[in-house]
Amino acid sequence: MPGMKIAIETVEGANRFTGYGDGYVDVNGSRHHANVAVGADALLPGWSHGSLEALTEGDLDAIAGMRPEIVLLGTGARFGFPSPAVLAPLHRAGVGVEVMDTRAACRTYNILLGEGRRVVAALIVERDARPA
Image (cartoon, rainbow, N blue to C red; front, top):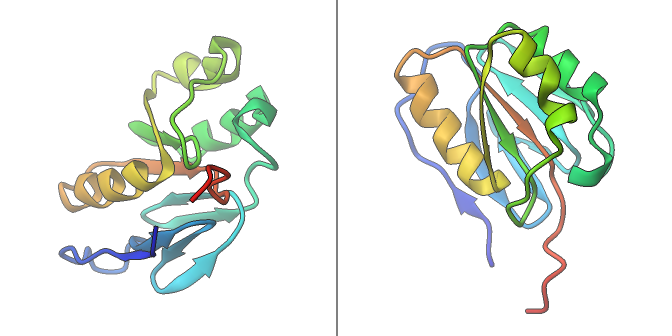
């Protein structure tokens, strides 16, 4: 599938997704080919290493430290759900969590950001391994 550019009302000075595709996301026009966490005023390249199965409590603890009201966990090209233990730091901090594929997380983040929500997108960025 070819890359997609996202057009949405800009929130002044805030990080937003400007595109995504197979194996990348664009934040404010800058391309990221590895896992990244994005909040309105914070960008954490390499916040986690590897796939959904490689996520650790420490990875999500770093996200909780960003003090969001909601986290969008983008699980890569396909939807998957992490173990409850991995999500525990967010639950302990009283942070809402929505799990979806990475492309949906990018779109949803921009919408919630535009509504003034304290949202963080924690994304697994990978190439789609499905046959073309």
